[in-house]
Structures are given as structure tokens and as C-alpha cells.
Length: 256
Image 1 (cartoon, one colour):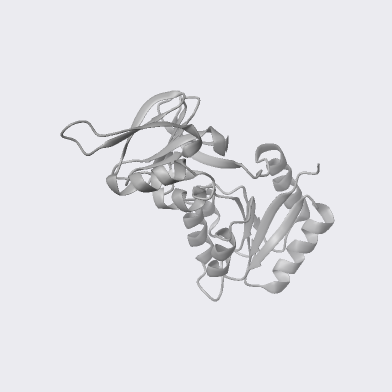
Image 2 (cartoon, rainbow, N blue to C red):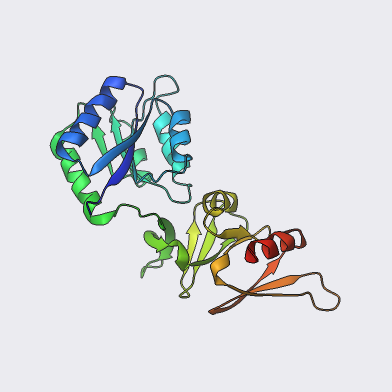
């Protein structure tokens, strides 16, 4: 089977989108353009449409919005549950340093250099595999041997996820995997995860947790003097509290 990377083009210039689309179809047919947008609002509609999107070719200066509209969109996109990679395609070089801080794959200045695009897409072929139906890329923080925070991207099957727990005081979550690994510092809210995963057998069981129902073992009733239910898992000793408002939904989901 031929691997395909599904990409969208975000640029307010129709001719620029047409030229890039032609370059991809002519030189890189494994990168399939599945959508086009001329502003950030249209781009968000594509991202939230539910279709798998592996990458975004993104203009920075969208004239109808601002000269840094593309950067603002990219910063927001990095907080998505499963953010696609980004290649900036722009006529301006002055935002190159800020674009680098977003961890974009690359930065290409118009008029486009085919060789530069070739090199960037070769890097993606080797380092960023195309998404499958049940696998997501989770970007999280790790502590390096120098005790500094570094970023790592894990490609995780949905079935590997045990539960997702909200971190305190910051807009990040911890993703607990069935084999015991914990991916911490993931930049996405619990609400975003819920929206992305509620059609894949995941359920919110309280203000702080979403669980994969496939791994649920039992629901323990409250002990005397308590109103707290406890949820346990098949291959893990962790237990999570279940809010009273969520018990009915949980039982209904498990008994489907």
C-alpha cells in the first residue's frame, strides 16, 4: 500500500495555493492536498472536521487578518491533541526566528524553491510517519540527561492509552499508557481530548480524567460515609475517582 500524507494549504493567495498544489502533485504525489483555506477560520474548520490531517503548509501574512495571523494560528494549533506538522510558506523572512520556536518542520520563502521543499518532505518521510486511523502523535516533555526539558513525539495507538489526567494549575495533561509509561506536559486541555476521543471508546469520568473503556475492570461502590466511586483497570493498580454526576453515564457506556 502506498503511504499518503494528508495535507492542507492555508494561504490567502489563490495563485500561491495553486502553484504549491501543482508542485506537490508533480514532484510529491504521496502528499495529498485534502483541503485549502484562505484564512485561519477556514483552516480551523478543516482541522476540526474530523478528517485525518498530517501536515499544514501555512502562510504567515494573511492580508485579510494580519501580517502574523499564520503564526497565531500555528501557536494555537500546537495545543491541539494531535497537532499536524507545519511548514511555513511565506513571502517574508522577518518571522523566521519566531516560526522556529513553534517547532515547525521548515520555513520556505516565496518564490518557492523546489529543492528546499524536496529536502523538507524527505525529512518528513523519514521522521514523521503518516497517521493511521487509530494512531496519534503525542508531543510531550521529557527530562534530558542535563536535567533540561526537551520535547519528544510518541506515535501511540489509541488502544495503548489507559487514561488521561489533567495537571494542576497548567493547561497540560498526563497521558497514562497501558504498559506503564506516562507522557507528561502534553499541551492540550482535557476538553480538547474529550472532543477528539469521545467517538473512540473514551469517556470523561470527572473533572480531571478521561478513561479508555476498553481497559476498565470494575467500579467500586462508595464505602460507608463516602460518596466516592472508584474505577479500576485490567492490567494496572491505579484507581480513579468517579464523580457522582458521571456514574450513570459510565455504567451506561460499559453496558452497551
